[in-house]
Length: 206
Image (cartoon, rainbow, N blue to C red; front, side, top):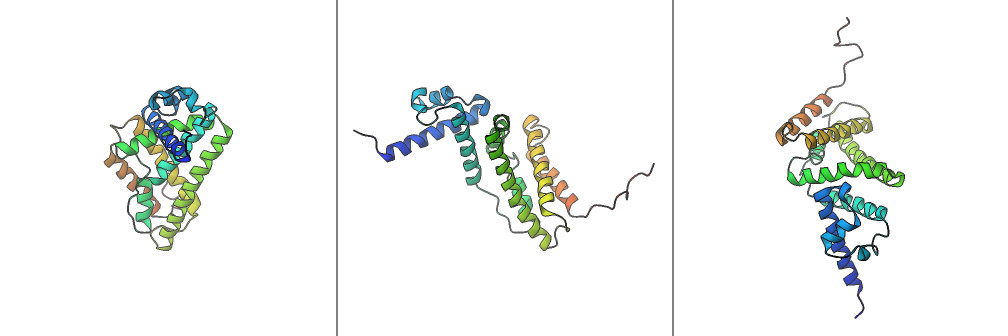
């Protein structure tokens, strides 16, 4: 009996689930056709119908990671600074699920940097994240909760802060439990609520 379109789509979903389980267990460093085939209980020959080369598998995994990230539940927030805070908290590895997702994201950086096209895709993803954050920051400025300034520049700094905190937490989770991550984020946001001092003010002239 010939396979139907429904059979093909179901098999593709099974393959995607197997790819995700390999990523969750081993990151991109352990993502191979053989590992996915073993997880799926299939042959590598079957997988070549979906991924003719390792790069195709990696590209699919990156798309899958983006889809999973976009579909995960987000914190409820109103507008203004509370919305900025919620968006940044959503990035941090505050629980086991978020930690697993961040481990996968960080493991993806190496493979993306090794391929110009994949690197460009990652750059686009992070740029879109900054754009969304910039819109939230601009709304907080309109409400008077943040001082005037270039929202895109502030968003770039905020993204850099949370990604740096993500890396520190993944390497030393004992030093950066969820409560401390939130406190550090709040300290960072508090530093944004006042305009910077004029050049030279508050510094030791000596």
